[in-house]
Image 1 (tube, rainbow, N blue to C red):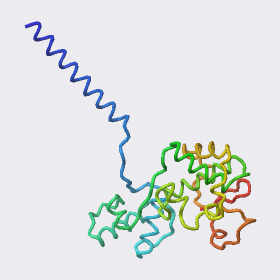
Image 2 (spheres, helix red, strand yellow):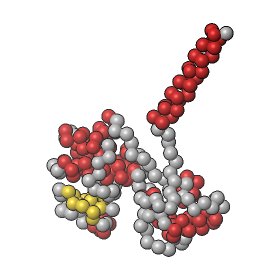
Image 3 (cartoon, helix red, strand yellow):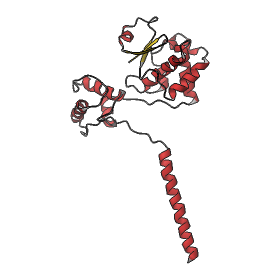
Image 4 (cartoon, rainbow, N blue to C red):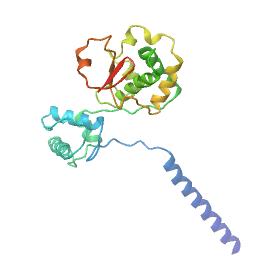
Length: 225
């Protein structure tokens, strides 16, 4: 009897340990979370929602990037129009119906660091270190913005996005500081505060880029939204 009792307790202890380990791993292993915007949300995704709803005549207010009652009511109207469950929350189904696709900043792997460093070196060679990180941050901000491709390579190689791609500078040797700048940008440092454009006022007369709101100036570049 004692032998059976010890066996039972030992088995229970093993089962309990496995359950605890499973729970711990569940917390440690990141799960892919679906994008959802609702009351109180703020950022590029909300801005994209407002812009799309505005195009459809459902959002008659300023595009602020803040998800308030006006945005919620516009989303409800869109959901009713599309036959989507009327929750007032812009989940994956609503976003797809609006045609919104937003990528996520990639991990700081060696391949990503090397690719980002190459464009940083080509576009910001000679700029102060913070300016080099800022160029990398703009590229990463574009990944998370609905107006640009959703991947690092997609943003970098987008037609007409960077002159360094077409004038050969992209294929020049990469400066050592660019690798550190790429690593810092991929790890979350954004000296621009969320900008998606930059330009050197001495090297461009493009009316579109000059029309953008300047947020900060670092070195020879103006960073804007």
